[in-house]
Image 1 (cartoon, rainbow, N blue to C red):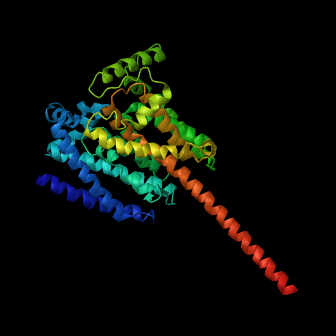
Image 2 (image 1 turned 45 degrees about the horizontal axis):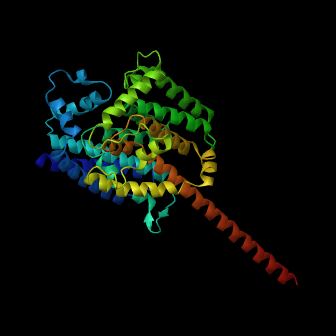
Image 3 (image 1 turned 180 degrees about the vertical axis):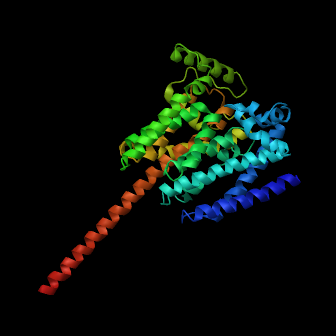
Amino acid sequence: MVGVIVLIVIFYLINKGIFRAYQTKHKFFDTKKMDLLYLYHLVFYGIYSWYASNNPSDSLRYYRDVSTHTGSWFDLFGTDTLFINFFSYPFYKLGFSYEMLMLTFAWFGYLGFVYAYLFFREKIPLNIKVFKKLDLFTLILFFPNMHFWTASLGKGAPIFLGLMMFTYAIINPKSRIVLLILASIIIFHIRPHVFMFVAVGTILGYMSGQEKIAFWKKAMIFVSMTGVLILAQDQILGVLGLENSENIIEDFEATTEKRAEDLSSSGSGVDMSSYSIPFKLFTFWFRPLFIDAPSMLGIITSFENLLYLLLFFKILKMDFIKFIMKSPSLVKMSFVIFFMTSFAMTFVMSNLGIIMRQKSMVMYFLFFVIYYYLAQKKYDKILKIRKLRLRRELNEKEKQQQLATE
């Protein structure tokens, strides 16, 4: 317990250094909100620690793997689960207990929220109210389910950090190249297939965005992302055991069907094989929803899923299609990453417990699209009001000039 308290203080001091660095770059940076977010995230570290002690948890398996490892550190290097062990091993060798390692990964998850904050606020300076009184950005930052699944030893925290770090770095890749490379390494080594979606989304977003982007920047993004995909194709296909496949489509269908059957056989499994694609996506994005909640955690998650659904309804309008077609590259990138990842996951996920955990890594891309859409509508409304006021002022001046001449 003493070690955990010491780590909390150390991470708090490191946070302050990070905050000062970003305050010099971004005037909007709110240290009070980030301090509050840190305390809030620590609460979920405590909640998840309690949950892991009373339920089966991958965090215990990860700690057992590193604590019983007898080889060298680099024997653990690899993708997927191996990378989490590789990432954890140095901390274990420094004497970190299970609780301290859990806290360390929870802090990585917290840093993901810091980069999400930077990404959202840098591109969307407007405040948006939803449900009449709630600030949308604050609501997004404090969604409980997002904090729960990023507050423990496992893949959730570092993959979320990698994704949010990537989105912040890609805004200005030239000056944030170190962050971009580090984020790409994290994403690729934890979930190679997700890195593929991120790379494809980035290429499509930058190639089709409406804003003027220098040709060299587009070329750099296209060449680097395409090159990485070509070099990493075996590792990406290896996630599903397709690296030696002669017919990728047929083998993919067979593999995903087998995984779906395995997951659906558990206590919180759902048989999605007969679902249509729209309902599969609905299940991945918005279930459980009260009636199919698998546990108390599922019931709590259902309230949050209801908010996701209500926010999603805000873009179910005809002008949203027009908005997406004319949107900037980062909006298109976020939309493609969210939709492609969700679509792929629906072929594999047939367990509500797994779905609750997996979707946490991509929901922020949907939130960004919704937030930008609502902010664009608000901005257009502000411009329209300003034009009307300017027109009225000009009319008043013309009337006054006419009276003066008469």
